[in-house]
Image 1 (cartoon, rainbow, N blue to C red):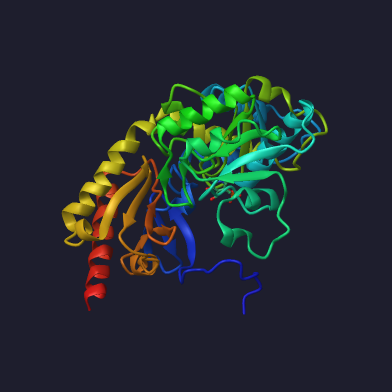
Image 2: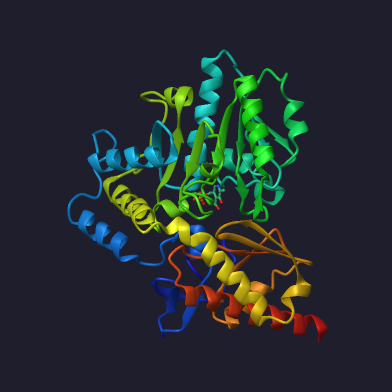
Length: 393
Ligand SMILES: Cc1ncc(COP(=O)(O)O)c(C=O)c1O
C-alpha cells in the first residue's frame, strides 16, 4: 500500500526523467508527451534556459520571504504586466491560489464600494481549482460533492448565454464575472468573441470587474500570450499559473486600473509566492516565449498534428465529431464517451487526456519540432483506429 493519499486515479506509468517532448521510465521506456503535465511544461521538459536559470538561482538565493524586497520578483512582475497590459500582480504558487487572490480582490472591491454581501458570477462547465472558494466557483458538481457547505457569494449561469448575464444587471450584490476564455477541464471549449465582448460591456455598464482565468490558456498556449490579447479589449483581472513556471510552482493574479488599487498591505499574502527561485524560472519562461517567438509556432503545430492524424487514420473521420479549443488547447470532440482512450494511448506510447467524458484533450509543448507534431498525429491515429476496431469487435 502506498503512503500517498489516494486522491488520484494514477495510470500505470512511473516517470523519472524528461527531455523536450519525451518522458521516460527508469528502464528508458519513452512516452511522447501531448499533455505537458496538463499545460505546464509548455517549453518541453527540462528546457535548458529554464534549467540553467533555476540552477543559477538555486546557488544564489532560493527564498527570503515577502517581508523584504525581492528584485527577481520585481523584474518578473514588470515583464508580466508589460506583456499582459496589466498594472500590478500578486504572486501565489498555483492556479487555485491565483484565483483565490482574484476572488478576494473582487470581494474587497465590493466592500470598498459599499456592498456587504458581494457576489461573483461564474459559468457552468468552468474549472477554477480545488480550494473551497475555487471549487465553489467551479461548474462541476463532482468537484463539489462531499465538501458542502460551499462558500456563499457565487451565482452560476450557463456559459455563452449573454442574456443570463443581462438578467443580473439589477442585482445589487454582483461585483465581478469570472470566466475562462477557453474552458479547459469543461471540454476544451472556446467562448465566442461576441460573448466575451458582451461580458466586457455588462461589466462596464454595471461597474463589475471582468476577471479572466487564464491558468490553462495563458503563457502562449492559444497563439497569443493570453487568449484576450487576440481580442480588442482586456479584462480587469487575469489569473495564470501552469505554463508560467514550466514545472516550477507559481501562480499570478494581475489587475489593471481601479482593480489594481484594491488589495493593500495586510489584505493578502503567501509565504512562498514569487520567491526568488520561482521568479527566476518564470522569467526564463517568458523570455524564451518572447525571444523564440513561440506563439507563432502554435497554429503551425496544431495544423501538423490534426493533418497527420487524419492522414494516418481510417476511423478519425467517423469517430471525431469536431475539433474544439484554440491553438494548443486542442480538443477532439468524439461522438461518444471514450475515457478508455487514455489507457489505449499508453500502449501506443502517447500521453493524452480525455475531459468531459468525450473530448480528447491535447496540450502539447510549444517547442515541438515538425516531426514530433507529425508523430503525435500518427500515434493518435493508431490509438483511434485501435479504438474503432474494439468498438466493432
Ligand atoms: C482554468 C484553470 N483554473 C485553475 C486551475 C487550478 O490550478 P491548480 O491545479 O494549479 O491549482 C486549473 C487547473 O487545471 C485550470 O485549468
